[in-house]
Structure formats: structure tokens, C-alpha cells
Amino acid sequence: VLVLTKILDSFLAIVNQKTVLGILCAKDLGGELKDWREKNFKMKRILFITTRNPYSGRYSGDVIRSFKIINLLKRRYKIDLVFLGRKDNLRIKDLNIISFEQPNYLKKILYCIISLLKLEPIQFGLFYSESMKNYIQENSNNYDVIFFHHIRSSQFLPKNYYGKTTLDMGDLYSDNYS
Image (cartoon, rainbow, N blue to C red; front, side, top):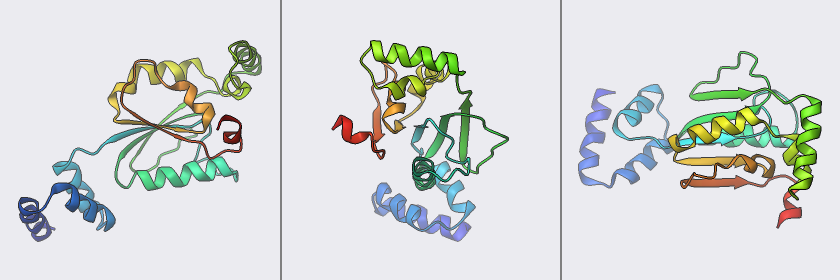
């Protein structure tokens, strides 16, 4: 590892750092490489927002898709995952998990009525959480990118966030909004 680090340091003096980082990320040599990358490069932070737990084991398209996206992203970025639902002592390597309780049915009905009055999709009301909204609002500026998984999670975009955002509209409802 020491020899590899010295060779890489020599490389950095000659070649563009981003190119070398891309090569390093493509060839994951284990924990030592990850430690070296974190020490020598500031990894971008991504807040990944979804309305369902991607690690729940549910066999549904949105859960599987978010699971695969997160596993790809966490190879190169520091990921904080925010979702609605129970955490159930979930611990995933290289992933900070923040979960929020689903609102009860009465609140969901109220949120759906509010969504209708605001001329928003009803699913915004079904997947709304005041505590999740507040957390994202207060912490959004700690991230380089906010990744919204599905249209229903886009309602959590903070008004004062000017960083990069990504919206994955991989659900069938996306045809309704295009």
C-alpha cells in the first residue's frame, strides 16, 4: 500500500487529479484505497431522498431501483440516505441512514386534501412528513447534491437550496408530468 501511495503521489504531480481519481474509482483495491481517496480528495456529499426504505427487502421496482442507485453512488460519494419508514437497526457500510416515521392515516388524509387544494399530485400528501421536510430544510446546505428518487420526494426541495439537484422519475407517474 505504501508503494502504491508513493506511485500515486508521483502520478498526481504529472497527471490531472480528476483523471487519476476516475481511474482509482474504477479499480477498487479495497479499504486502503478508500482511505487514501478520502485523505487526498474531498468526496462530494449527496443527500439521497426517497419515500421508501431501499434496504427493506421489498420486491418492488422503486425499492430495487433506489437500492441499485445508492450502491453505485456510494462507490464515489459520501451518501446520506433519508426515507420514510422504520430503520429497524439497519446499518449499511459507507452509508449514513436517517429515517422518519410515516404519518398516521388521519394526517395522510389531511395532507392529501391539502395537496388537492394546492393542485399538487395526491401522492405528495400520501408521502409527506413534516419532520422529514424540516430536517432536509435545516441540513440541505451541507450537501453538494440532493438526489430525489421519484416525483413524490421532490416536494422536499428546500426553498433556499442553490446546489445541484437530481430527480429520478423512474416511476409510471412520470408520464403524467412530461
